[in-house]
Amino acid sequence: MVPGPDNLAPGGPNSTGLADRLPPEIPARILARGLYWRFWSVQQISDELRISYNTVHSWKVRDDWDGASPLERATNETLCRYLSLIWKENKSGSDFKEIDLLGRQMERQARIGKYQDGGNEADLNPKVKNRTGPAAQAKKDAAKNRITPDMIAALREDFEASLFGHQEVWAKTTSQRTRMILKSRQIGATWYFARERLLVALEEGKNQIFVSASRAQANIFRTYIVQWVQKVCGVSLKGDPIVIQRGGEEEPEDPVELYFLGTNYRTAQGYHGDVIIDEAFWIYGFEELFKVASAMATHKIYTRTIFSTPSTLAHEAYPMWSGERFNKRRAKADKIRIDISHAALAAGSLGPDGIWRQIVTVFDAVAKGFDLVDVEELQRENSVDEFDMLFRCIFMDDGASMFPFDVMRRCMVDSWDVWRDYQPHHPRPYAGEVWLGYDPNASESGTGDDAALVAIAAPSEIGGKFRVLEKKRLRGLDFAGQDRAIRDMAARYDVTKIAIDTTGVGKAVVQLVAKWFPTVEPITYSVQTKSQMVYKAKHVITSNRLEFDAGWLDVMQAFMAIRPEVNKQGVTFVASRAGGVGHADLAWAIMNALYFEPLDISEPPGGGSTVEIFGD
Image 1 (cartoon, rainbow, N blue to C red):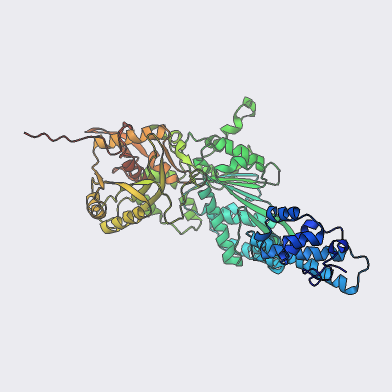
Image 2 (cartoon, rainbow, N blue to C red; image 1 turned 30 degrees about the vertical axis):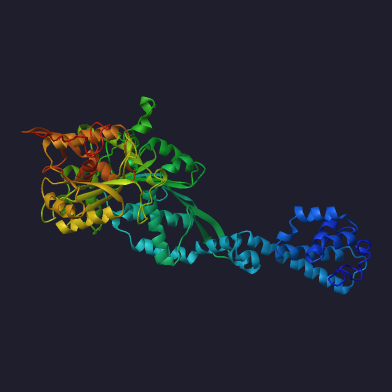
């Protein structure tokens, strides 16, 4: 007889010889524990199994029989019964049914144990696991990112129907091995190339690698792609990188991957695909970047697309644009000369170095039907120098600037990768001390130059770094509106200092801000004050103590525009335009905040002066 519930009670039929009938494969220790959990005493177990009392008692203490959970007790009993049946010589049909039942019971007990150890509902119910497990999730993700041939056709139709004339020229050059486009600001280049490269990926099956000065800048491509696919196809693309499944479920094609990189391109040399470089003339270390890009696009099926607004003649990308990079270390007879004038490149031209170049000014775009800008308004709002650089594609000679590109580029960082303590989309993005700097509108009506507001993370230690966390350009706001903008930004941070230029209309703004921030610091610009601010900023920057996101080209341009000017009062500092500081407003806002730190950084911020009162 196999031991069971009836014949294992004290004084049962087997009370004189249970040990003789037990299968030898069931350890006595396990059987003794089972008997104890059936309320046998240690003495009864000792007598029944013919094992010394001390041995049974030691098992009880070491294995903590009294502390066992109900699950452990049930598992032990199931195991004993299972082993008894397994080793039975002549099994009946009911024995096999019971073996199957016990096996399923042990499986269920194992799932319950896993659930109790911190598992989830899938551990209890295999059907749930089939619906939510890694394999099921991977299948769902693949389905979510699936774009069928019909969807690709719809994207192609929408793409071609939405192009302006200058973009149609670009659409005819997708097969060029290397394209280098010098373009005006705000003519839809990033928007266009996000769509163009997605279609190339879907139709030709080639990976696409988007590279920008920062991750935040690169994600603009991602946003355009995700929004477009959602609008046309109703598909929400997920993942980073985005892996797109092509074809139908019955006839799938090889998937394609879309990568969006900032300064982390250095770790991406294992990638392969078409490379797209945005704002190349503003990227620090372009020569190194292009070497990596060339490696990723080594195969002749891949292309390289480079587009940017111009920066300075001294930028690393300029020799590639001018052809000097090709001529480097070549014999005189092998050197080439490339005409990079607007007249030569307005329609696009393939140079002898294999690079297709084009210059697209705002005037070119408007002439080809681009109707989203008012050129006359742009000319009124920007200085001659700024308009030439941003909209006429003329490179800046920053030799006279107080903050030339080579100085400013050391401030550029990929904030998403470097600033681990800053979460830009969180209601409270940063937990440390923050200073605000504000450069108001140039007129009381709010119709003059833009106002600029910045939030700067103060150094956590003497000689530490300043970080420009947030910036805003304000236009058309009255005094109360400017006050609300400052208050809203202050509410997001632990603001301890606010500095506002009060030379003009800033006086009224200061009065409003002082009602809720009494320690606001008014700064009255004078020749001496502006000189101190510029030299202070120059010292901070050359000491590698200022950082801002590499995608913020307007901050770069603002600082680069500041240059010395001689007037009746001496040498002062202005932006490169008639009529004062102009669109260097972001630079002045930042310098307002930096001005809190003394020139001698060993002094406490705000100055270290003391006042002594003497009595009679």
